[in-house]
Image (cartoon, rainbow, N blue to C red):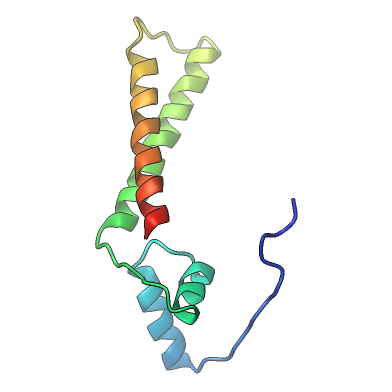
Length: 105
């Protein structure tokens, strides 16, 4: 798969500037590239406290759910009824909504 962006840009920072940059990025849900791109192109950068922790927690729940799904599919765990499938579908809906919100930022 080819890259959407093919031009690499680099610049130098002193130690203090690098710490400041990392601090600002850590308060967002953006990657370093996304953050710098938005800064340089005068796009809005929204800081949503706690969103990063929410994303991490949803990923952990999804990972646990995938492990359970794997165990069910291999017969090492038995689930009665359709509850497990419903939970997985609900988690996917939540993740999709969160992803949509983050893309708007």
